Every structure is written in structure tokens, then in C-alpha cells.
Image (spheres, rainbow, N blue to C red):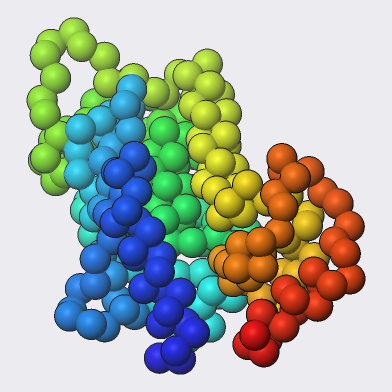
Length: 245
């Protein structure tokens, strides 16, 4: 594994361990091998998956972070965008919408959000999608049964709703999921303006590396507003990025 790739993965794992709020976990599967990981998160509230603990197999490609991690659920679940047989996932973030700005943590948060916002019109599992479209109540019932059986979710008392699959709640949860994913992306910028950082990202560096260079040089965050850097600062940042300082 290249040293830069290994450093980035190790830093991402350390950041996940330090973040006590997201409740996302990641650990190497075999000792010091950082190319095969296991991610874990809890099912989101007000969904059939609430209270369940879900495990995800993560394989890091050679081209990471320029190619997305390969993820599939180890925990069986009943969801239109996840194969009920293989755990394969249909999610834009893990395919054409992937960006080097994203991280293992943000990908796992996107998966957690996916449990709140099923997309039956773009399914990975046609049988599950058909049930959600034709009979949302039956879908919730089966999804909850699977969460209890395979993810250790607590059984709910009779009459207690499992939440989540009406048109109104799906729309509301979709907005929450979108906001959560956007916050996860922006957190990588450490308060700097996105356009300001991305001008250096366009040179081929990833966001964490550029942000680290900005912080090393002492660049003003300017309350998150964009602005033109002085030429001397540009030189200092570029030198740092190319390892010349």
C-alpha cells in the first residue's frame, strides 16, 4: 500500500475513533491490513431498523480516494436499495457520485441515511421495492422482523409504530438525510470556504491534505467566506503541498 494512501486511511480511522457523536465505528478486519475494514452503525430512529446494529464490509481499492470504497452489508436487511441475498448496495455516493472529498465515515453516514430514505424506483432488490410500493405496511413489518432477527433490534410492543414509509415521512427523512450528508461533506473543510479549498483540490490534492496545509501556514478562515489569497501565502501553501517546507 502506498504511504500516502495508508496515511489517509489511518487518519480517517483515527478521526472516526475520536468522533463520539456520529456513533459510526470502523476497524481493520485483520491486524494492520487497512485495505479490508468493518464498519458498524445503528439503525436510525423512526425507521423499521431502529435499534439494530448493522455491519458493513469495506474494501479499499488501490486508487482510493479517487475511487470509492467497495461496501456491502454483512448484516442481512430488508431494504429496496440493498440486496437481501448478497448485501450489495445501490447508492450514488459509492459509485458515480463519489468524490475524493468524501471519506469512509461520510460513506457510512450516507448508508445510515439510506435506511431512512428508501428509493424503491431505483432498487437493488426488486422484490423488496415492489413490496414497499404496493404495501408499505407489510414492507415495514418484514423490515422490522429482519432488524430484530439479524441486527439485534429490540422487539416493539404491539401498536407501536416502526415509522418511516409513508410519502410524507419519506420526504421529510430525505431532506434530513440530505442535510446530514452535506454536513458530513463540509466537515472535511474545517471551517474554510469550500471554493477556496477546492481551487487547490483541482490541482490534484485531496481535501484533508489541502486543509492541513492551510492550517500549517495559518490561513485565516475568514468566517467561511471566499477570498483571494496573497501571493506569499499561495507560495507557502504550494510549497507545503509539494513537501518543500
